[in-house]
Image (cartoon, rainbow, N blue to C red; front, top):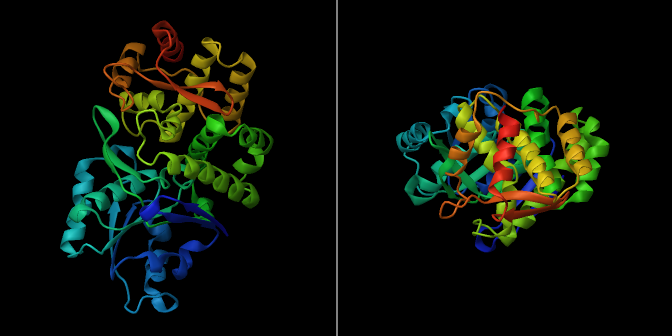
Length: 370
């Protein structure tokens, strides 16, 4: 069992990492604020884990609660194409029909899409109700479940509608990765690699040595990489909870400006988020090398690690450089029409920059879209 403390003053919480935690009432029930819980999950995860969570929430005898938690569930359709306001409206309808009050707790049981949508619903319902994250994909466990970012997509841009809403607790049950399809598992590894590139060169080197074990889902390797990824993200969030204009949290967007344009331009759901992030990381590395900020050898190391994690780095078709640039200009980090990017000054050294030659960005987009 690993415990990480996220120190945000009154909004502080713990991330618990271990095996079998979904069945532990003591890990979940005490953080249900009142006597009602709305579990938001999806059509893939519900048959696997919803009954287990219901039983755990009913097992109140080992918790501080004196009354049994009343549970309602809302099952979302799967995937990014359904990460929109219309589906959040259906979560609200579930909460209202169940007469959930301001102490009702929303519990996200699923991957990043479920967590983002359930968290956004919790942020908005009655102007904010408590929220627990139980991520079941690698991507959600190492990234999206920690930090309080919630939201939905719009046809013109990914995650452009949302709110910061910190969970009361994050429960990472590594056993849920046993049922995760290999493509989804690989997609999560993109966010793990990103952490090393941003500010943990030692972790990046560990991944180079241990990627085979990680991809084989060796328990010790999984526990370490999840804990290390969450630890790194936690320290950044503590410095910059709401992503100030030039704050540390913006560095977590390495590769994401490219990735979000890929997802938006190709159509939500064509690429898994982690797959788009992987190509975005390759694009950021390529552009950084073109600027002379990293060596060709460092660029090749990044590409080799992404490939070892079974992630895409090759140029993609169906999306022009002009269309990519058009979408990127809608990015949340753009200011006064100026597109800021997170690029690399070395492995483990990322920076937000805006003073790059426009032609280098154009050349990068052209290289990856022909």
